[in-house]
Image 1 (cartoon, helix red, strand yellow):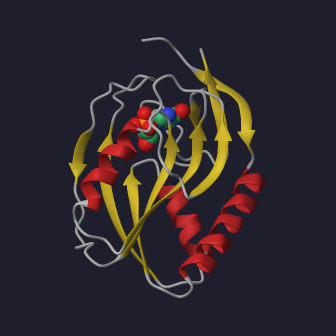
Image 2 (cartoon, rainbow, N blue to C red; image 1 turned 90 degrees about the vertical axis):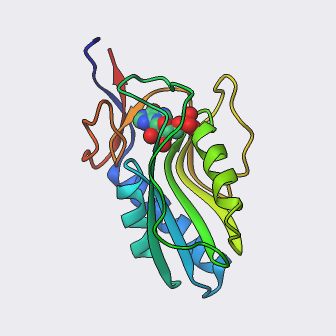
Image 3 (cartoon, rainbow, N blue to C red; image 1 turned 30 degrees about the vertical axis):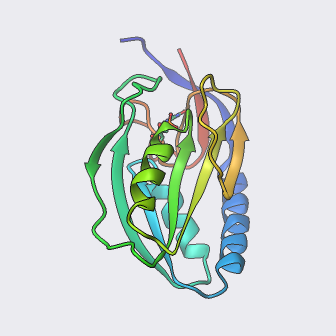
Length: 176
Ligand code: IMP
């Protein structure tokens, strides 16, 4: 397998913190005190979800789905595998899916269809990063987006390459 190392820093810890606070402010305002069920997509979203949730001023519950389209490579396999389903019944709840990064949109389009069928009161997406200009990208409505980035592979702040780098407190590219 090719060896990779960290490239440039795309977003510093401070830049991420500011954006997360702003997203939380917008979300708290939009839900106006209604309880949100945050559904984090494991594993990548765990850092973002923890920081975002602690900035919210609206009541919140949590659930997690584990789902992947990547093996150990840096390109999607195109096949979604559900490793862990939800524990909480989402019927009638305001569900906010929290994702670390959207690449082709395949993972989220699969999850949206799956969760919509369970009758939530509302269903929205919050993703820290969204890759633009990706070939074959699925058009999704992303209500809350942290940063739009180019089609580069990134790690840190929850995101991995072959399970490494998730604990980096900033977001960097990966280079060969
Ligand atoms: P999609 O289904 O193609 O949108 O891929 C989304 C999933 O792929 C994310 O939840 C991540 O787990 C993973 N992913 C996509 N791009 C990257 C990246 O640049 N770094 C790390 N993981 C990524």
